[in-house]
Length: 141
Ligand code: IDP
Image (tube, rainbow, N blue to C red; front, side, top):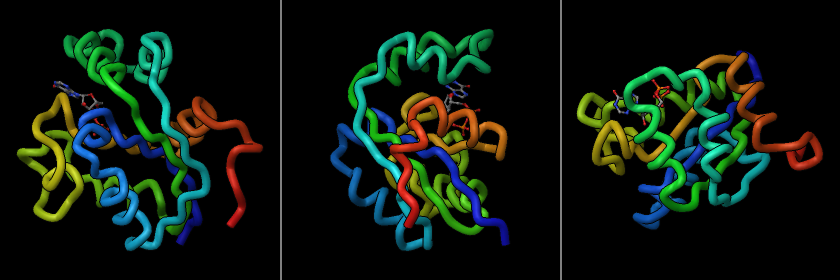
């Protein structure tokens, strides 16, 4: 299996619900290691840049508004097939369609406020990790 890194974000709704620890615990219990982490208040420009691929979508303004509505926790997860493993833990984008026991099924209310982000490919993981972390902020473990 491939040892990978992926970018995870605990979004403002989950931070406001005070479930940061419960979500981080799911990563650890699944065997993923947190190799970098920080809490941030995203600026509008940071949120727009992060979600640039969605800028033509009808929900882009709402997405940026939501992502800047309160602090987020960004982390780099490392482990076997970390990108897919994190997506499995997260569940479907729309929490109403997310499998029972996934983070979104348990902690998200709606497709707009869906608790977590996770990179969806090796290319996006590389871009997204570099968006938030310098190499010196990622720790070998
Ligand atoms: P993902 O977060 O599961 O990878 P993407 O399709 O990359 O899903 O969408 C990014 C984020 O944009 C979603 O997590 C969600 O918050 C928001 N989003 C996606 N589709 C919709 C929609 O149809 N309405 C409102 N928000 C959406």
